[in-house]
Image (cartoon, rainbow, N blue to C red; front, side, top):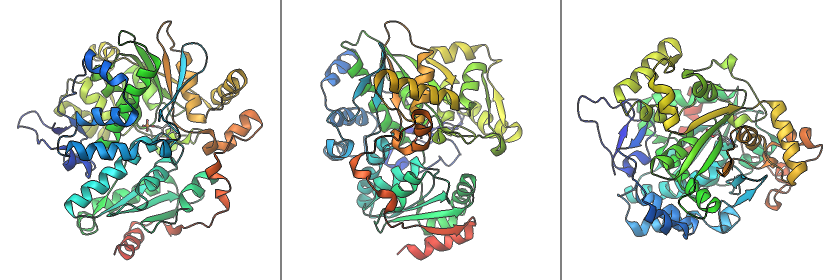
Length: 475
Ligand SMILES: *Cc1c(COP(=O)(O)O)cnc(C)c1O
């Protein structure tokens, strides 16, 4: 399997890379995102075979279709080591729980940091360690987080050989639980940097440091953000696992609802569907930051300004643009890299938006790919958390609540609707208390973490200072 950029020009033959080459890279050199040259097709017979597999075995089968530069035995060992009951809490890894008839929750949040990002990040940690050892190289991961990504990355990379993490976050802006999760880590290769500023300042610093190519090369700076293909690929697996749990035969279809921000999670659903998994609808659920809902309703993709990006009670979906969206649009445009470049590079830069709605093919194409969407507000979130708790005794987090609210608007008779549970309620306790008048349950291993000593360095929002800090701590 080879990988190409979403902005590859069709004129000259596009540059093709193997999996391990793009594993440690972020964006493609032309500014595009990597995608496999084609989506491998999964036959009915293969689906039947995969039904009986454990999660780790299933992961190995799916990943094998995309990775041919790691020996099979090694890849198998990596999958076995990653997806264990010990790390993810159950033998199923992603168990399905029923709510009302026809609606299910797929539990993706029982990993080390209690959000679905662990599903991919845990694999990434093991792939990085493997590939860096093979090359005899080191990597210093520089990231920016408003909560879930940073902790998932740190728990995946802690203690890994050849990897250091420098994670910036806006000082005092994450929930107390999220701060405690990250700052209580004692591993020497994990560096928490609290920035005197907001999340955008953290992102700007990461960008500024990454744009300093000499510094980047000298200090082997890398990233683990959601545009990394390996993360997306790892997420494809749980669409298959959810499908097998909700159906008895491959003649049945299911739909998925995905609480969405950067479009990474639901893009993995698009890949699974493109491989032949019988998915009927992919329902994109957004909060008040409705960039994606607007696109699927109107065909207009409009990037928001910082002033127009709302702080909500489902903060991991508070985005101004959806960084993985370019992958879907590339497919939507028949994989025309030139056209994708002109939309995401030229039109976004000059006017902050583009419109596909006028294109008569748009509605048909989005429909052909199964996409629909909906939006949820703070009041919807509270009502959904309350209703789900009262009727089923199930506590859901704020992001999952956005999903459940929108899913209910798209349920069709005879088609199971699976809502992806993207975090556990304990991560967003204040809103749960607001909805239910009682605090969410806390897994035993997180008892008292807010009281543990914190390892964090407070620094000003200044890229030069951050560079100096990295240089001092790389040895
Ligand atoms: C990251 C995150 C999301 C959004 O996922 P995308 O892949 O960015 O669309 C939703 N919910 C939670 C809890 C998250 O951490």
